Image (cartoon, rainbow, N blue to C red; front, side, top):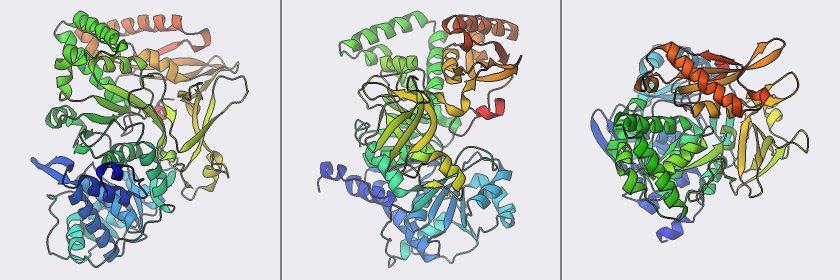
Length: 568
């Protein structure tokens, strides 16, 4: 088959995803990464061989049908272990790398994990507390070696082993066949956010995930084998793993692995990516970095004039971005031109600004229970307020309390909707109907052209005494546009028998210092003035009644979303 024909073949399983990609892209680089100050590159064909070796070893060592927990930083071995666990007939259980150490034992118990794979950062804790992990029979250390696995060494299985020993063994034992995949069975278990008492475990099949990969082909068709993707989000998160890693494999990208959030700036310059999958916080950080440099050089007026010229030219299909902003985008490696943003709403004005400087941002909407993609804006379509059209594998309806309501709960149905919550029939029944409709818990509406808009999260809605609903996300969008504000959360605080709209704000002291506001009192006063301006734009019941200033940044999830529940 020619490459164009292979590109049209639907992915049937995640193993098929890697197998098909090896056929399509062969010796092209799949993964690039740095370890122990040494640079490595792994081709599509080599990674396919590695997954085969890992899978054969898993079968040989009796891991078929086992639940394999994986915790650690992004690396090829993490992804290969994830693939080998499900391909050998078991279940992959990604675990949040930022989990509090004392919670890991409980999470392993909840998921009934049999085998635990872990990175070196977790080694001392896991090896010291190994006897506390009930039911875990074997422990696999992930990434303390170079990626050479083609030796003739066969190892005996020990309680503590390494991924290198497993891969070496699987490379030798070639008489074990890769099992035929059953895409319908539970292959992945994912924890929802929360503590051990509130977290649920989402059960996904390979069919769920592959539906997303296939559905993303058309809207993301501008991403191809010439693209270089920098992977910055934690790989245990289904957004990064499915829409970042596996979709990029399907498209033939070179994937460069960012080894630490501290090294993003360095790796942008080192790998010079053309595309990334990000959450809004990264876009905000990029924007703040641009504006910091612009202000430092005293170029604000010139920059804003350039934005206006670029936007005017864009309306008549003339691209002035490189000519006007080539030096600006050098900070991101000089080639970054496509961002896929999900996880939360992004300010529309940021989409407009980045488009003007030559970086197209498309928003998507997803949820773990949908593996995770629900909708996405196709590249080439400019609609900064929408999170896209629902992907072609899904149906959607808006469940309104009253027919006259402008919005309602977003309810979806399709082959990417989860199997249910693990051993939690009650929670499953609360969100998943018998005929497959999933209640997302998000509120929104669909316009006449079929574009989906999110108005807020059901659990975040502030219901006032008179029955009016306030979506805090709407007010937060106004606050986020204030340069003095670095982070914010809007909640309802009980006051005089009703809820008062309360804004918790962490100021951007670096920015305020740059404009001459030296004391906290000056900063707070300036933000209060901005809040008064915002309130004049809002209807009475939505106005911010109380303003509270935070002494430190908000606590966040690994995907950089603020843990709102901590501040209610």
